[in-house]
Image (cartoon, rainbow, N blue to C red; front, side):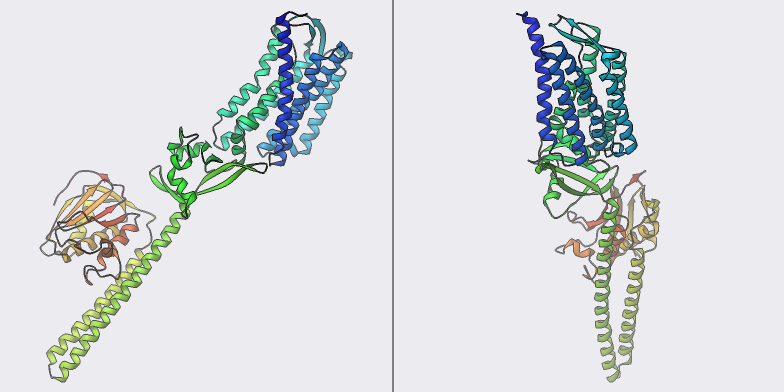
Length: 554
């Protein structure tokens, strides 16, 4: 009977190679479910070669005679060499390259394989690949002493394996995924190199090929531990968008670096439901609105949120959520919507003013006619003058609206504008009567100077019409306010002040604040009435990048 230490060492080797054979056989079932035909073909060939290699190494260990042991080892070398070609085929197919289909590469690979096989099969004649001898440590067995040819072939094989890993690593980087799972698989798969060296240089391990063990680990890593990562990376190659991978329960499993940059909340969110980590994104997937806006690098960008099923064979194992940057398209759409709304407002304003004008002109002409019949020439003349002024006013309104329509396009180019100077010029260009202004606006904004001047003109004209004696312009963190001490909005709806054709608070002032908002929106700003202010009326213009300087008052 062998000593216990020897028996356990032998059992350990048998278990290792038997286990590698079994793992490759089981992994074959799962590998056959991969949908991409070429990737599937490469991985199946790799598992067949590795499983066969491990099985013949096992035969070398347990064969009852030296002749069978020798034959098993030679066959294992021939079968094992196929794993290099299968590995490169898999890596090329998985990374969407064409090396595995190129006839020149295929012929070269077949030629090199046959040449090396010839060296291995003729080893009994030249003994350059390996020799054998019987040893008793760590258990009685026929040991293999590898020769120069073996190490040359091994070096070439590992160089080619490294090329395959480089292709995988490059794909992970291009897909913007975490490369650590790949690093773990590479490290464990490369461990047999260390075992080969130890087996050659010391008696601690027997001198045998340990590579089948590494390939078995790779198979487990790709098909079981990191299966989702490998499939996600392959699917999202050449996708320049943020990608989040969910399992079939809607929990976050993986995401690329673009997703992490776009959604910092993803850090540490693995295993968390998408609805918990990114509720806005989840709402876009489940609702009718699929556009998500995010503040990124100091600007608002828009992303189309879409998802697709993630399958292995015929089974759904999760979803890929893709965030496609559609900022330019969405900005154009919103600009068109704004312009359409603006044109509808202009049409409503013209229609409203036209009806008012016709009513006034018709009424004044009727009065003039009746006055003439009564011989009241003075009244007739005044009525006709009023009708004429009303018609002229209508003509001026149409001209103003035409000018506004020309200015209604969103500004593409802006310049730094001193807000204090623009406010002063706009104030002096308006008939403000006895009203005074206070300016607390020492800063710059990026704007179209003419349109900003028009915005303040509309505001000041409205303030004076609103009965203001004092107007104040003050900067805020993201814009400015225009406050007057005139009439408060009372029971009126704040939005009515900004609607063309509504005539709030009256027909004469009904277009001033709609014009103000339109000019603000051409800059990408927003204008609203501060409903919390009751000592007059305060207009808040926001969404502006304000560069403060010093406070100024005039």
